[in-house]
Length: 262
Image 1 (cartoon, one colour):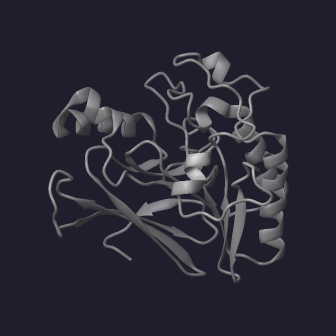
Image 2: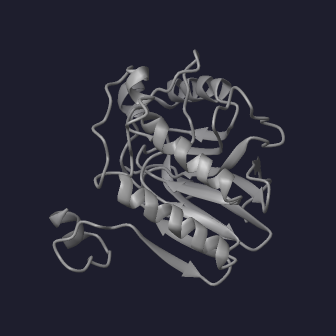
Image 3: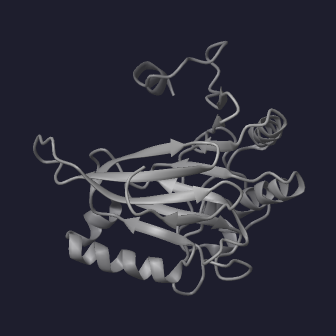
């Protein structure tokens, strides 16, 4: 945390040495940007890989009680203030990532803290809060997805019925994905991503080889997230390309592929 506050362009918490980094930025009635800490404060110890029962244990928490109550208060305040888009800026993928058997894979993500995610869904339902947008990094891969409770039951991938929002995952600026380190080439990575897309119908876009950045474009009627990739990180270049875009109409909680960048 000391290194984080010394090196990252972030306002230091008061009074120091508080480790609280979660906070909210309001942009008129267009959006509330609610920044979370899903890495340190209040987080239960990560389950072991493959421990599906552990990942689904009801006592596990990703945010901790204090931050979780704060998040619900911020979401309620955004609705009361008339903010069109409540946007969560946070670290780990919220949308489910299931294997071919329908089980969660990664205990480091919200999948590893299913009880926390279900409580959030229940709050969104009870307070009738829609238009949730989740911004994620961490995995050094690109993903765009709806966020249902279970993508294999009670969710319609064509209409988005059963989705609580959308999750946009941006790739790294330079660091390789675990897939690149494990598989070594673009073709093998593309094949594995295709398998994961087939097993996860809520996912509308996936790519795990290229590096780059995202641009999120918002207005009261819709949002669009665009992924831009660079051809290489091994040499300086001014080249880039638009890889994909996902657009979400207000009130739908459902992403559809865009024909071009916003």
